[in-house]
Amino acid sequence: MLHNLVSKWAPADHLGRYRVGVVFLAGSLVVDRVVVPVVVPVADRAVDQAVGRAVGRAVGRAVDQAVGRAVGRAVDQAVDQAVGQAGSPDFQAEAHLAP
Image 1 (tube, rainbow, N blue to C red):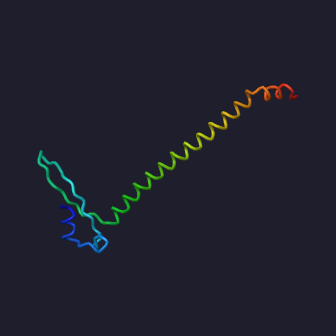
Image 2: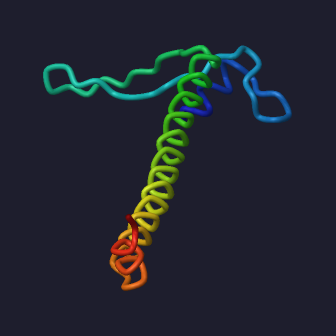
């Protein structure tokens, strides 16, 4: 129904884009227990920007988490190796020989 409403006021081009650059967001409002349908025209660019920001934040968060995990694993492995070498008999023998 919403698509029909938008199409009526802003015919789409052959790619399905609305030529006037307006998107209609539909929802409902409850006023004194009465549901009132609401249709709000929003500039196409504003919707694109909001979606772009949301996707950008999600991708950024995912990249941050992945990098954090990779760095954490690398640090853990380096510490484990250093502790393992420090506990080895060869390392302890060299430590006793050092002046």
